[in-house]
Every structure is written in C-alpha cells, then in structure tokens.
Image 1: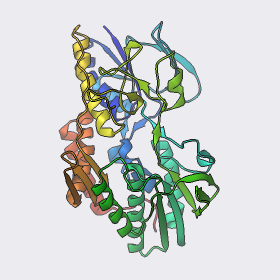
Image 2 (image 1 turned 90 degrees about the horizontal axis):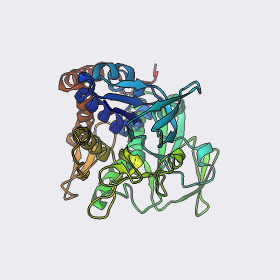
Image 3 (image 1 turned 60 degrees about the vertical axis):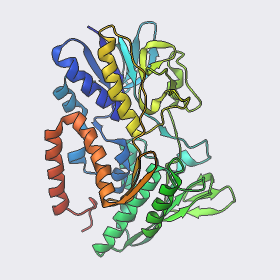
Image 4 (image 1 turned 135 degrees about the vertical axis):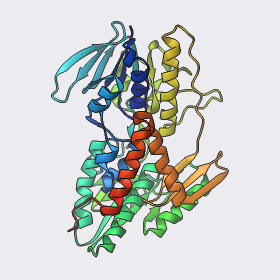
Length: 410
C-alpha cells in the first residue's frame, strides 16, 4: 500500500484528494492524506466576494474535516515547512507552532501562488491582499466600515487582471445597492493598471468591453499607470502623481511563496514556481508532483501552462488518472492544457466571456450564469450533482429573502 500526501487544499489539491479518496481510500488499497493549514476551503476565484461581503460562507465554504470523512482521505491541519527527499519525509508546523513529521511514498505540492508586489516599496505595509480566505476576510473587515459610513470614501485597487476587475465591480455593485437602501455611503473606486488596458492577458476586444462595463458602474480606470511606492493613505506613481485613498488593495501579478525555493534542492524559476516535466513530476525527483500555480509545466509548443483556475482543475483530473496508471506500473501520460476561454464577472449579475480561442466574445446575465456554472462544476467534483442541486436551490431561496449585502445595514 502506497501513501500519497497532497500539500495544499486549494481547487487543485482538494479535487485531487477527492478523486483519489474515492478511488483508493474506500477500498483501503492506498493511503491518501491532505495537508492544509486552513479549516475550510474557499474557491479562490471568488475570494473577491468575501472581501465585498457577498460570499455565502454557509453554503459555499467546504469543511476539510467533514469532507475528508465523507470522501475517505485523511486531513492534517498543518503547514509544510521543509522536505527531506532522501528519507521521503515532510516537516509540518501546526497553528500552535508545534513541529511534526510525515512520511510519504508520493508527494503532490499544490499550494498555489500569491500576489507579486514586485518589491515595490511600502506595498506590504500599506496595501491589502487577496491571496487567501483569511486575507479576504480581513479586507472585508476594513471595507465594511467604509460601506456603512456616511459620505464619500475612496478605494484604490492596483492590478486590472481578473482579481482586480472582479473586486472593483463587486464593490461597485455593493455600493450602488446600499444607495437603494437609502444608505448614505458612497464608495469611489479607482482601478490602476500598469499596462495599456485592463485584462492584459486576455483578448483586446474583451478588455474594451470590460472597461466600458466598469466605467458604466462609476469605476475610474487608470491604465498606463505604474505605482512607484505605497504610503499610508496614498499611492505614488512613477510620474510623481499622488492617488489618495482610504483603503488600498494590491492585485497585480503573481509569484509563489519563498519557501518553495528551499525544498531540498528542487528546481524553481524566477517566480519561485517548482519546475516539472510534462508528466507534472519534479525535474529532480519522480516521487514528487506539482499542481496548479505552483508548477512551471512545459507544453509541446514550448509554452508553459498558465496560472489559471481552469488549468489547475484540468491538472488535478489528469493527475488523478495518472496515479491509477502509476500504481498499476503503467507509464504516465503528459499533461496537455486545453484553453477553455475566459469569463470575468463584472458585478453580481453581469459578466464578459471569451470563447472559441477568442473568436467569440459574449456578455450579459447569461455569461454571468456561465461563470457561476464553472464554480458549480468544481462543487460537483467535491460533492456530486445531488448536493450541488440542493445548494443551488437553497441559494436562490436565500437570495430572494436576504439583502444582497451581508453587512449590518439597519
């Protein structure tokens, strides 16, 4: 019997242990273990909803402890701190700082990525981030008073990629909704991007539609604006302009955590991603696999798998199938990423999507429903269609009975 340890309970890691637990855990043929410091799983593309106070924690969060029990894998609440490849042992640290060790036969690292501040002075001290559910909750605790206070308040968001765009649009929607409740607050949002358009990684025609939708919501979009440093209550651009704000958020670029560069000699790139071959195996150790944003995975055309949620989901499904082959002594097949397009939520009831290799650009409520469907497909892997259907029905009932914004507006 082999022991497969998966480090990281994000979309890729959780989907992988779910599939492996159902395949091997229920028959007690192999031991499946998830190592994750958090108690609950939140789908990372929706962290901006936590920061905006619109995420339904009761229905959409996943308890690792409960999920592990239902899907026949073990859950260890701890963070990985070091690795010994010779003895195949991990060093773990729990929330109280206590150290422990865990051996493995196969190790999968799926810890995702974090925002890249590009070593911009003052950013880590004066800006909020959305790299985890905890950071998103802390952001909401500071955004909530601004939404409830009388008068006009300013919020700056640096980075007009998917996270920055969706956060700006969601907050604009919440602010507008509060006006309908005759609430006195007004949130002025400025979205700042260093390149010449929003969504610089997407097709240009999609960027144009998204920017128009943002501006229609009253969001100020600043492109070709590079932040030189952050200070308390203000951002200073490369041209010396000062952008004043009550709150500043950073959503520009990604990199992996520094500790990934210190894992017993495993190869990493300039973004601290672990280098893997086409089979998702570490370039230096066939017993170690890497998933999602943590991996620099080559493709046949010479490119690398992009750090996207859909790529992580595809890799998790692929690796689950490959473990079945590996444990039967069969050769592994390479991971080939298939681009399914891009869908960006611009508020809670509107989205813009790029499909068919950017040949088709769609927008509107229907595309927003497609965005929600992607999340439900993630839930389907975790729970099955029966529970997902029940969750959708409950959510619609709650939306009909409760206000859009979960803050106290009385």
